[in-house]
Length: 356
Image (cartoon, rainbow, N blue to C red):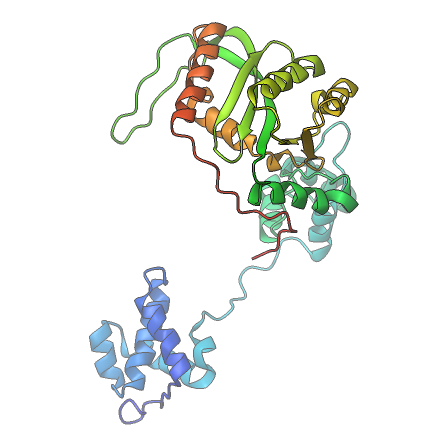
């Protein structure tokens, strides 16, 4: 269509029109992008430049500019043209030196690079004085962050990892009929700490406040066995985290479970679980069948879900006047949990995770 006598013709295909309409309707679109889209849509509807200028409260020259840019280059013509700007103060060799420095080992004894240290190194190699702030701008433009380090773990037992993970998950998803399935682990060194001054409860528009300083009253360790099929958990506070203490807990479980029932247990590779004393005890109790989680995969142990909830609801912001107070709250939480216990809904199948 044409937009009046002498105006540049604007023809909109359906796809281009749809994109411009989305730009106008989006609350996240830039104001200038919305204005340009509205000019083109109005021109495509046959309005003259003057009518468009009056409707959008802009000059006729503005309408003429973006109408012509779209007619000549399409949607790409509605983008801002590149500007020459001020010439770069530093040549490519300085930028390369900054990148090379940021991606090399930091100078001994430091572990990571700072912008100031990079600037000093570059000044010493390229004889080009560069400020720490300029180093930061160049690195930001390249999305390079030498001060940030992300941890990772080299997985052990790689050939057997997925088989063991699948074996544990198969036990959760399809437990043997008539058997007891237990997920067992310890939570050690739980600190009993009390704040030196009372905190303040949350208020509208203001989070709760907690005193920073605290007093220590010792620690406690908790061993827990989660019944995978019911969600109930049996806990015991222990003073030592060794194989003898762990097998004593297993002995307690063995006596509590009816004779003749098979017991399938999921254990991680903690030292008290893999010790010779524990393996000897398991060999002497043939109704116990153990699935070991792969190394570095203790998150496959379902009891960790219970420990996570315990941490969030009792420990993280808890205030404990003594070790006995900590123990009382640990036991009370377990009792409350069992009153309404339900099995966790386990969905992971132990297969390699795929990117979405």
